[in-house]
Picture 1 (cartoon, rainbow, N blue to C red):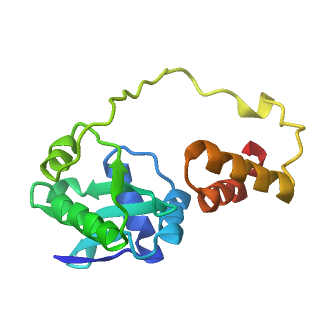
Picture 2 (picture 1 turned 45 degrees about the vertical axis):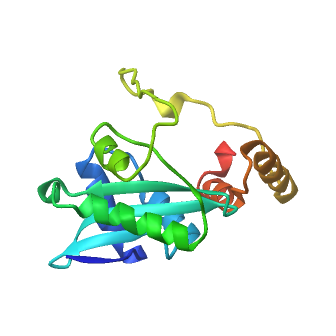
Length: 181
C-alpha cells in the first residue's frame, strides 16, 4: 500500500469511490478540494489502484473541514481509512489548524470516535421521492448574473456571517453555475 498526495489525475478514481459509496460528489467538487488544498488531499494505492481517499480544506487557518474519506468496499477493515484520516490530521496539525470538522456517516462514526472526534450535532438526510420535473418547461431566470463588484460584496458578507473567508470556494461555485449565484 502507498499513501500519497492526491493529484488531478486521481479525480476519476475518487469519483469511482464515491459512486461505490452512493455519494453525490462531482468532478468539480473534487477539483475544488485539490485547488484549495493541493498538499492536504490524499490517496491510498494498492497495485497502482486508488483504494481510498481523504481531503481537507481550511478556512482562514481558523478551522478545517475533512471530507471525501472513502475506502473501496473490497479494501475496508484493513486500516486504510484510519491511515488516511491520521494523515489529514497530521497535515492540519503541521499547518497549525487546531479545529477540524467532518460529517460522519453511521459507517464512519466508529473510526472518527477512535481518533478523538466527538459529535457537534446530529443531522439526518431525508429524501422526497417523485418523478423528476420537466426542466424544459421551467422558465430561465431573467435575473442578470452578479457583477464582479456584487460578487465581491457577496463574498464579504459571507465572510462576516460564516466567520472565515470562503471566497475561493464561492468563486469556484460561481464559475461553475453563475445563474445560481
